[in-house]
Length: 518
Image 1 (cartoon, rainbow, N blue to C red):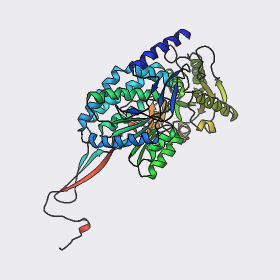
Image 2: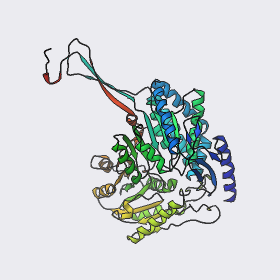
Image 3: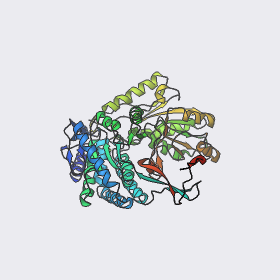
Image 4: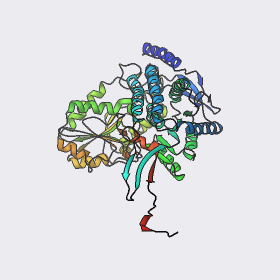
C-alpha cells in the first residue's frame, strides 16, 4: 500500500495543479470574482486522511452579493438565443473532456469512489452537456385550436430565473452538471451550494467554467458557487428571488427544503434517498444476477442513492444466490480507490463509519443473521479509518433498520414464494427511487413494469438498481421526492410555461356568451 499511496499523492498533486486548486481557495464565486469571508472548510481525503486543501465559506453578505449578481446576469442570459446558450454549454463540455483525468482523480480522492467511477462521473457531465446542446434547439411548445373563431392558441416556455442547486457528497460534480447544463440552455443562471464534504470538486468545476466565461466575455453571475454548511442552504431555500431549488440528499434534508420553498410558493426539485431492491426470480440468469447485485451493493462503498440495499430472492434459488454472492464478497479487494486493482474504496468519513456499525448492531438486535461479517479495516494503507468490509445480513423486510436507508455497503437478503408478495416487499418501504427484477420470464418482467408492479421512478429488468443514463429522467417517488433530473423532458421544470391566445379578427367574443352593449 505504501507505493500505491505515494503514487496516489503524486498524481493528486498534479491533478490539483491542473485544476488550479490551491492550499486555500475562495469558496464563493460569481465567475471571475472569487471571495468568501466565512469560516474555513478543510477537506480531508477519506482515502488516506490527508488534508487536500481548504475553502472559505459563504457569509450572509457574500450570499447577498452572489444573488444580486446572478439576478442581474439572468436579465442578460435570458435574452441570448437558446442555441447560442447551447454553444456555451458545448464549450464547457469540451473543457470537461480536457480536464477529465484530473477532475476524475480529484472526485475519487476527495469523495473516495474508485477512479473509474470518478472518471465515469465526469463522463456523465460531458454526456449531459452533449444532451443539453441538442436540447437547446428543441425547447418546443405546442399549438392548439381555439374554441373561438378567428383565434389561435399556443403554449411556450420561457426562462425561469435564478436556480439554486444543493448537491450531495456522493456525486460531487455530476448532479450539479445535470441541473446546470439544462438550466443554462433554458436561460437560467445558477447558484450552487455543494456538499461541505467535497468542496474542492466544486471549486474545480467553477475554475473550468471561468475559462469558458473569459473566452466568451460572459458577465459575472451565470455560474455561481456558495460553499458552506446548512445555513447557506437555508439562504437559498428562503430566498424569494430563487424560483426553483433543486436539492439532492437525504429525505430529512429534502423535507426541510420542500416545506421551506413551498411556504414561499417556490418550486423544488427533490432527489432524495433510495432503499432499492432487486427481486431475483426462480428463472433468473444467476451469472448476471450476481454481478448486478454485487456492484449495486458495494459500488461507491454503498454510497449511491441507487445502491442495492435489499435482495428479495425466490425461495427455490435463495441458497444458491446467497452462496455465490457470499463467495464473491470474499474476493473483493478493499483499498485506495485510485488503485484500479481495488473494487471498494472508503466511506466518506468516520461519522459514516459509525452509522455503518450502528446499523449492523440494530439489524442483529432485530433478529438479523450476519452471513458475511463486516468491520472497520485498520493497518497500513487504511489510516483514514474510513475503510469497512461490505456486509450481507439475512433479514426480514419489516425490520426498522431495513426500512431505513443506510449509506454504507450493507445488503439485506430475504426470501419470497410468490411474485405478488415480492413486489409488495419491494414497494413496502417509504422510498421509491430504483428497483429491478432478474428474470427470464416475460410475464414476470411485464408484471413488474406494470401499473401494479414496482412503484419506483426507475424499474429495470435484468440490470441492477445502480447507475442511470442521462437520456432518461432520473428520480423517484414517495420519500424520494418526486423530482426528475437529467434527460427526457426534465428540462421543463427549469422554465415557466405560458399559454397564449391571439385574436386576429375585429371582434371579441366573450366567454360563456356574455355580451356588453356599449
